[in-house]
Amino acid sequence: MGEVLGRLRADVGNAAAVLGFVGAPWTLAAYAVEGKSSKTYSVIKAMAFREPALLHQLLGLLADSIATYVRYQIDSGAQVVQLFDSWAGQLSPVDYDTFAAPYQKRVIDQVKATHPDTPLILYISGSAGVLERMARTGVDIISLDWTVDMAEGIARLPEHIGVQGNVDPGLLFGTPEGIRDRILDTVRKARGRRHILNLGHGILPGTPEDNARVFFETGKAVNDLLGATV
Image 1 (cartoon, rainbow, N blue to C red):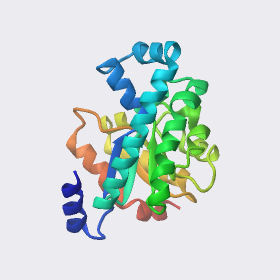
Image 2 (tube, rainbow, N blue to C red):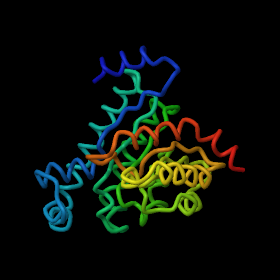
Image 3 (cartoon, rainbow, N blue to C red):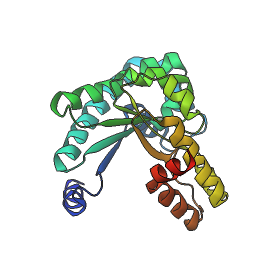
Image 4 (tube, helix red, strand yellow):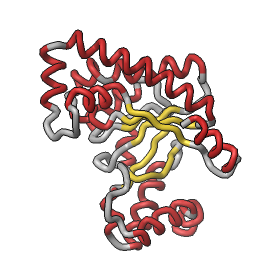
């Protein structure tokens, strides 16, 4: 991983940012305990509610290891690192405060202690109910999924927090016109805030390549397009 990041950083120069990524403690613990993907998360939640001390021990170990790995990625060339806690959106707010947020913060605090200038992004799928809580972890940028209107999401976050997202990946099965209109709407609503245009989740299997091209080309030209529509 380190060698790949180093080569990539040397190749792209200042033409693009090199993004590192890691899983966050709750989600990695869920994969480890469940042993596979899940629709109910019943195994990890049973552990949380029956053996919380054991789960906290696991989460702490994961957080410290993840922080070490994030620092390694930065030292190897990553200029931004995104933490994916995809399954944390399946927690109630009180359980998010107990089992996810403290360990996200533990990672972020350790990384910021040695690499304070490297932006960190936090993504949670289905995060509408915990946006304010995400902002309290010390993260620099919050990645919004498409279940939150961009303008409403920004209004719920402190001004110093940047945003990423949040076009519905399903839109890429639609028309080029619809894709362009949604991108313009998203960027227009995010104006005045640091914003990384992105899908609100990963690109879906079977997405037409031409429509993916429309997304990227529109994103690169979005400032000119917005200027033309004012």
